[in-house]
Amino acid sequence: MRGAVLTPDGVRAIDARLERAGLLDPAMEVAGEAVARAVQERWPTGRVVLLAGGGANGGDALVAARHLLAAGRSVTVLARPSTHPLTRLNRRRLRAVRGEVRPLTPASLNRAARGATVLVDGLLGTGFRPPLRDDLARVIGALNARDRGPDVLAIDLPSGLDATRADLPGEAVRADVTVTFIGPKPAQLFGDAAAHGETLIVTPLPVPAAWIEDVQVAARPDDAALGALLPVRTASAHKGTAGRVWIVGGDPGTVGAPALAGLGALRTGAGLVTVHSAADVPLVTPELMAQRHADLRAFLTASDVRPDAVALGMGLGPDAPALAREVLRWTVPTVLDADALQPELCGHGHDRCLWTPHPGEAARVLGVSTLEITRDPLAAARALQERLGGVVVLKGGPSVVARSGDLSVSTGGHPGMASAGMGDTLGGMLAALLAQGLPAWDAARVGVRLHARAGERAARTFGYGLGATDVAHEIGGAWADLRSAGPRP
Ligand SMILES: NC(=O)C1=CN([C@@H]2O[C@H](COP(=O)(O)OP(=O)(O)OC[C@H]3O[C@@H](n4cnc5c(N)ncnc54)[C@H](O)[C@@H]3O)[C@@H](O)[C@H]2O)[C@@H](O)CC1
Image (cartoon, protein in one colour):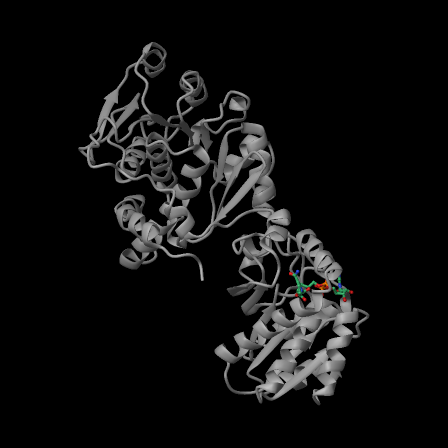
């Protein structure tokens, strides 16, 4: 599974199986060769400096050095002492083809880096355990201090990052490109840590897909797989069969939120969208039906009409939990967003619920700080799902979708999407997918990606500052993109 997200435990488990099968050496060879190939493609001329640490990450660097030498490149290798058998073997192999290996110190690094085109960081990979020892901290400090020096390519993970964490444990290599193996690690997807390796090249290794599935912490389905989940409308469909969505939201002062959710639902194909609100919702989208209720709770309690799906909470105000409880009794597919994301609703959901917190709302539900959520979004999504049940979308860049025993990460989107109203539109989109019959898990995974893709398209037109309506208008194009996507190369 190429889209797998791995942690060091997973990498170690795969390594152990490779070792038992006598395949660790070929895997390191493939890894090192991929690094050499990336260097050749991106920096085809000039001298290459490779830094090899004592573990298998250093072994990858030594293999890369051998392939670069064979390609006729000028190569300088600076290495730390190693006790790792494969790393030592690859040092001997490098020497056998006249590759010179010199000791790595801050001074030798500074000398070698002068006039080099690219530095390859093979110091620490998934085997690093913080805190960083002083001698290596000095080397990494010297490497980062070279602000006008050569570019940096990191092997597997920029050295100094803890693969499992989205924050920075201390000094870590700033890399222009990272060649990572099998799949990204959490540090390469989330937070400040992800910013340390700007471009990520994911390289497969010769490992059976089943071994990877056994240990992956999250899946990262590609656009082709997600596009195949999108509903298909028959020629005989009419508005009553295309999905009836109710948006329950809005309060004086926050009436835009349910209108944006309604727009998202319409553009995602819902046949009939009604906004139920205690306030007057502006009819900026005349296709929406807006119903104002003097007593919204009494209306929901008395109603014996059931829509195909509900999105509840957008701008709904302090009554949201009480109103949510009424709607949850219906057990129709329900998106719970914004003001409905309250700890008091834990235990009141059902299997067809889809909860969509951003990190602040997630922190409120779990009773922790927002920092605790953003430091480890995978763990946070898992904890939220255990507390709330159903399916959870922990929104962010990237978002994490969780159901019982399963996590999926959705990358993409655009930084301009960090603006008010964006989540309201997503909530409406998810309700529309639920109303068209998708199970919550599928609706969440494809809906989040559809929204992100629409954002990518809107950014081409509007650039940096994106509004939720700009993104909503691109949903149709994003839909076509996912439908026509091929498998990830
Ligand atoms: N299954 C896979 O994905 C494969 C991974 N490979 C490589 O293997 C790497 C993992 O190798 P290892 O497990 O040997 O680990 P690493 O090479 O990442 O790190 C181990 C080295 O780091 C040092 N170290 C650990 N904590 C430190 C600290 N706090 N301060 C200073 N030094 C510290 C150790 O003394 C040891 O020398 C991956 O990152 C990848 O580059 C490839 O070789 C092939 C297969």
